[in-house]
Image (cartoon, rainbow over all chains, first blue to last red; front, side, top):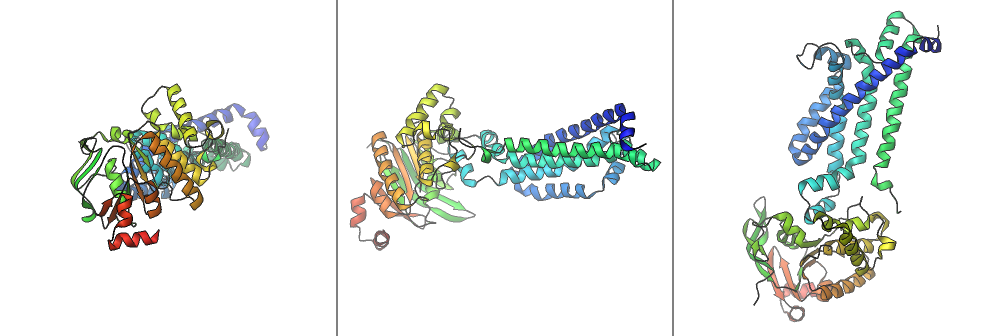
Length: 215
Length: 242
């Protein structure tokens, strides 16, 4: 049975696991944004914290994913077997690009623009919302894109701790020494990564004020 | 004499214990165009930033309309004081009309009033709304950006205008033109202006009073005629640079 025959015969399962995989990545990206974005903003207000926090996020990145899943399993609440643990791990990986890009994006806003905003009488929130986040949006989006693409790839390993997703086919295929089965997981995963990359790249461009021209 | 619009009372400003400005005592009357002249590092920009409360004095008091900048709600203060900064600082992601209409929007003016005001101001600085309103700052020349900066500072009709080398980054011809227009505009609007420059010619062209800052202190204060006539060595040296 070749790859196409295998996918055709198991299309319901392939589809189900693809949706499951998207769910894992979407949930973890959403959480990584919800945590990483405010944290990145906080670092721009307390630059002294940026070294330790970004350093910590960097260290998390260096933990091999299978090991990180293993470390999380025995933990209460966030650990155990299943999707929840996988999402926690993917959030941890996604935090670095989000924190770092938010911090870098906002820090690189022209000081003259910030001075003007304050001088015009903007409150701190107005400065953040109307100026800093708008100007940093393309850089922050690039961080989301990195987190999403990594999430798709690392998410395949989550099958090892029973989180489901496209990794199921890969692990099954490895155990069966059957390339068609491995590809039934790997090809959709690769396509998902490309789609996430391309789709978010389009959003990034749409939000980039530099690309806007006169109406 | 009427109460000064802006008053520095024995103001000292320090950074890391080092005195940047002061002690300085100075008052600006309504309708006056006070030009602060001095070399870089003389404390000119610091003096401006003390007026709109971007920084607070270490000692003494800066009073705007009779109230200390410590007591002012700083957001309110800044919306009453127009500010044109050195590198213009236009918001690069906002069109010209949005840049100019910013303070009115922050002040929650009705949209129709904001729009009318933006059109009026753009006409005033010679950038017709139909042609320039929807452009982004990077689609303007340096001189045009400066004009937008001036229009933006005037948008909410502030009684006080602070200008930090607003024409510093344009070529000499555009600069002379901008100065002449600015002078006419201010005369017409009757604003109290504090203007910072290191260009003595610019000071002479615009000022009703010139203050020379040197090493954070007031070295000379007087009208342009007195400035021209002064025998002080430092003032003479500044004049010769012009």
